[in-house]
Every structure is written in structure tokens, then in C-alpha cells.
Image (cartoon, rainbow, N blue to C red; front, side):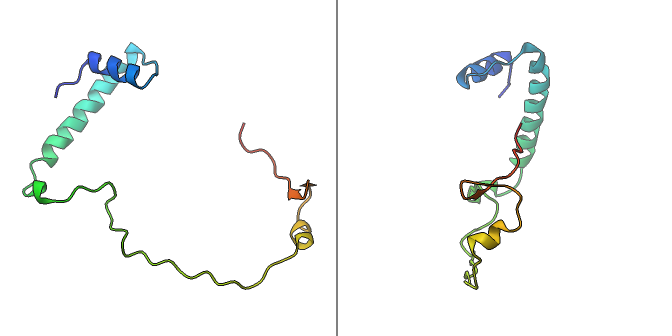
Length: 97
């Protein structure tokens, strides 16, 4: 499939965002590269015999460890190592600007 400016305009409109014409050449180059990769991948023998996956590893063999309850500390002990407490919670500095 040949990707062109019309595709970029439609996709941007479908996704409801503005796409400047200056980025079209770069996007075309990226899509052409992806198409070349897909052409190479499709040349593998027996590729159609494989099952499609969204994740490359099987997750059916995952075994979670058992949580072991040991001990807890009181709220006063938890607050003893902090400078600011507000409404019964530890106040931390804002990290998102």
C-alpha cells in the first residue's frame, strides 16, 4: 500500500489532532521503512502457520509468590520519619509541574 498525504490528513482528522504539512515527508519515510520491514517479514517460510500474539511471551506459566504477613508499625512510627503531616497523611512535594 502506497502511503501519501491524503492518508495522513484522513488519519489526523480521524484522531482529531492537527498535523502540519512539514511533517508529512518524515512520516512518509517512516511508513515506507515499516512497509519494507513487513515485506521482509512476510518472506519468512511458514509464517502463516504461526499464531498471532499481542505479547511475545506466554503468561500462562506465571506463578506469583505468596505474601507473608510479618508485622506492621503504628501510624505514629510511620510519621516519626517525616517532616510534614497533613490531615493524617504524609505530605510530599509536588513532582509534576
